[in-house]
Amino acid sequence: MPENREYFNRRLHSLLGVIPIGIFLIQHFIVNHFAVYGASSFNAAASFMESLPFRYALEIFIIFLPILYHAIYGLYIVFQGKNNTRRYGYFRNWMFLLQRVTGVFLLIFIAWHVWETRVQAALGVDVNYDMMADILSSPWMLAFYIAGVLSATFHFANGLWSFAVSWGITITPRSQLIMTYVSIGVFVVLSFVGIRAILAFINPDLANI
Amino acid sequence: MSENNVVKFIITRQDSPEEESYTEEFEIPYRANMNVISALMEIRRNPVNAAGKETAPVNWDMNCLEEVCGACSMVVNGKPRQSCTALIDNLEQPIHLEPMKTFPVVRDLIVDRSRMFDSLKKVKAWIPIDGTYDLGPGPRMAENKRQWAYELSKCMTCGVCLEACPNVNNNSEFIGPAAVSQVRLFNSHPTGEMNKEERIESLMGEGGLQDCGNSQNCVQSCPKGIPLTTSIAALNREMTVQSFKSFFGSDK
Image 1 (tube, each protein chain N blue to C red):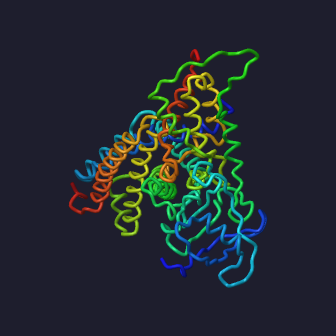
Image 2: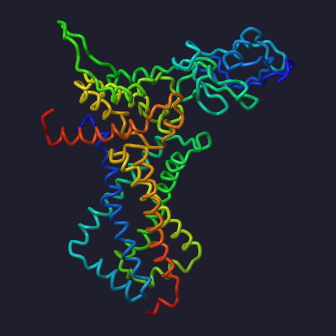
C-alpha cells in the first residue's frame, strides 16, 4: 500500500477514533459513573479495572498507542487546514473548527490527566475516589475537567458523524442530517454521564458511602 | 436610484505575482442593471480612482458573461462567485472585490486556476474511446442516471469550492471538491465506468479525497448547486470498497 500511505494513515486515524478510543471513552465514563453510588462503589470498580489480566497490554494497545497516533496525526491534520468560519459561518464549518479546537484542547487535557492519574499510579500513588475528590476540590481543576469531559464528548460525537461520511456510510444529505441528530444525542447522553460522575467527586455526602 | 448616484468599490489589487497586494477605491457612475463586470469595464474606460488620481486599469478575467465558463470568479463582498452574475443592485456598498487567494494571483483579480486542471488530469476526468479500430457504439445510459449525472456535468471549474474549502491551501495538497465530483460523473458514464478503478485509485493518492475534512462549505458555495458533498461521500464509499478489494483480492 505504499502509494496510498496518506489514504491509509487518514483512514486509520478515523477508525482509531471510534475503535478503540471511542469505545474506551464510553467504558471510562461508565466506570467513573460508579462514583455516583458512593466512594466505595467507585473504588471497587477502579480496582476491578486495575486488576484486569494483561493490564499493560490492554493499556498499551487499546489506549496509549491509539490515542498517541490519533493525537499526533490529528495535530498534523489541524495544521493542514486554514479555518474560515468568519467568511463561511455555516453549521458544518463551525463543527469542522470545533472538532479541531476540542482535539487540540484534549491533547493538553489528556496529557495532564494521564500525568495526574496513571503516571502517579505507576509511581505508587493509589488511584481512588479521594484522589479525584482532592484534584477536583480546586475550582480551576473542576472547570478544567468539565471542559475536558465536554471536549471529549463533543469530539467523539462529531467524530462519529464524520466517520460515517468518511467511510461512505451516510451519503445522502438526508442520512447525514439524521446522523447529525444522532451525534447530538450521543453528545448529550455522554456529557450527562461524564459530568454527573465529576459532580459526584465533589459531593461530600458520597465521600463516606 | 437617480442618474447622479455613484457605485463605490474597494478593490484588492496586485501588480504582479511577486508583489504585495494593496487596496484601491473607486467611485463610478451608476447605470441601471449594472453588474460587477460592467463596472470594471467602466473603470477600464476611465481609470481614475476615488481620490481622482489616474491609475492603471483593474485587470480581471472573463469569457462567457453568462455564468457557464467560470473564468470571472472573484471574491465579491467576502464570498467567492462569478462577477458576471453579481448584480450591483443586489450588493451592499462599498463593494469589496478581491481575487480568490487560494490560487496564485497573476494580477489584480486574475488568478491562475491551473491546479484545478492538473487535478482533472490526475483523476483522469475523461472517457478513453480511442482505439486502433472502430470500437462501435458504447453501452446505453439509463435516463434516470443521465438526469443526475447531468447535474454533475454543470461544473465549470470556476474554483469557488476550492476557495471556500478550509483544507485547500498552500499547506495541503488536497485536490478539492471539483475534481472529486468529476470522478463520480465519469464513473457513472457507461463507457467511463470501464476505467472506474483507475480513477478511484488516483483519488486515493497524495492530496486525494482522504484530505476532505467535511466542512461542507463547497456544497453551500457552488454557484451551480452541484451536490458536491453527496459526491464526496459516495466516492468515500467507493474508496472503502476499492481498498478492501485491492487488499483482500477480488475479480475486478
